[in-house]
Length: 128
Length: 130
Image (cartoon, rainbow over all chains, first blue to last red; front, side):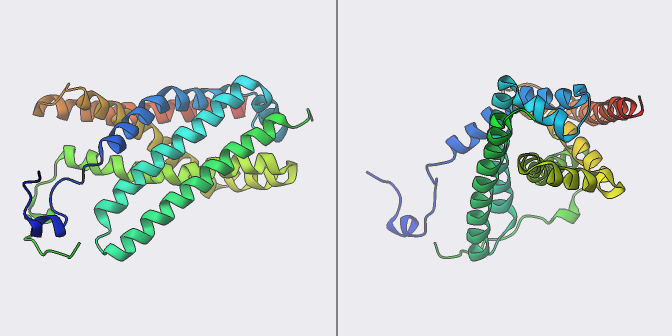
């Protein structure tokens, strides 16, 4: 039995009964990004050069490709959740907010697919 | 849901400047900046996948002064968001909540982010020079 008044229910007052998953996803991806981003930053510094051949050869190592795919996926997920909250908090016009939220989600899907595909293409390319 | 007009809380300008609120909004700003950095990262990977010519063009863009400013900016955003993110995770776990601890950890975060950024670019540039 609900204790909400019929008017309150129609107006959508009270808890949305969702949000825990978003909150937890944001934190878990944050924790995962700590080692992944630090590894990436240190790996960039350790590379002998950042030219086409050096970076291609680096990504061709299976471990590096796996970690890069994980980095792109986690980064895009974390970014999607974060920018969503920013849009929800600062865009007050309901119509515009809905459009921006949908666009943000779609852009992040494109970003994730493109990034992962790019890593796989480089990793599986015949040695140059 | 039909819009309900509710009274607004006292507006931003009545509050005194505080380090805690500044660092809080900086966390969001650097986060948005890093989302743009993620676009650049994926662009870099795509250029690498597209071939030597595309990669050379992409590298050329970031070799120029505006490109370098962006890269340094993203490093700073990353180091800040990383350090302050760890501070947030500590809060989530229930540590460092009292006023003095929160203020001190904020100062530590700013110092650590600056130092990490400087260290990263010092190593990066000295490797280029070598």
